[in-house]
Image (cartoon, rainbow, N blue to C red; front, side, top):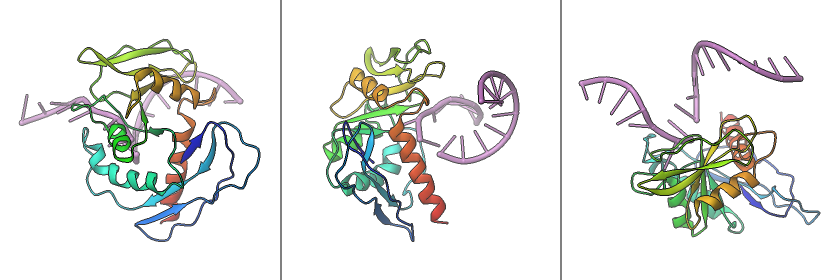
Length: 197
DNA sequence: GCGACAG
DNA sequence: ATCTTGTCGC
């Protein structure tokens, strides 16, 4: 899904018919635009080529996600990925791969680190604390909702830990811990899977 | 050898 | 991710 600091949209959800399809939401007509509204949407239906293995997530989901990004009418300013960035054995998490391949800056957001280490900040919305790897800060634990466990915002392609934390916080609401774009992407993907059965 | 190990 | 279990709030 493509999100911009200012745009609006009601999203259409085309029916899924068979595997290996690229589906997209209809683009919105002009109208009042507000922050965090969906301006475009793409769903790629296909089967994963590789099994899940920690450290090799890009091998499993990278190719499909790349097709999703390339399916957008125009490239977004930044990609928010449910994956790590520099927090990886080879400093090459899926968020780094997707950004590098598409040329779009990226930020990662996960429940826990892959190899980085850091102490959790207080559970107060906006609070952050660094997660490091080899003495280098690769992400920021970020509390998006008071009382909830912080989310790890990862530096991705051409972004740094602070930018990652700022983005994750900016696209989160007082009501949910998970950043809105990821909630929405999951909802749409889950619906596509259901309709496909 | 066994558990860990983004999703 | 998905599943199961436990806890909290409406």
